[in-house]
Image (cartoon, rainbow, N blue to C red):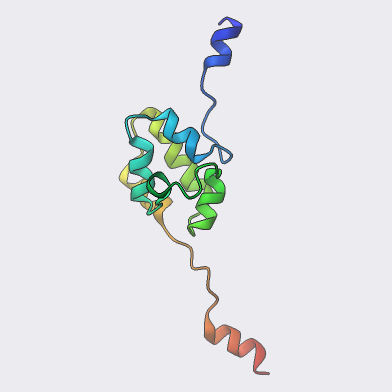
Length: 106
């Protein structure tokens, strides 16, 4: 592979890949559709286009690992419904009120 061809080859999707880079990489709308399935409005509101997907995952209460794997799967015609479900799962950021009460009511 010649040096210019190697420079033109797209880098693999990683946690530091930005929303803009994903939208540019998939002009057919595949990345935007996946963002919509994850309930991320990034492709539509352009609020955080230059945000890395790992930070976007955290901001939207998703685990970064499954999200990155789902976007990587776009390169091979994916992701599967199971991968989307895993990436779309929301983490409960709030502490259980009963546990907090028990901790401070001693």
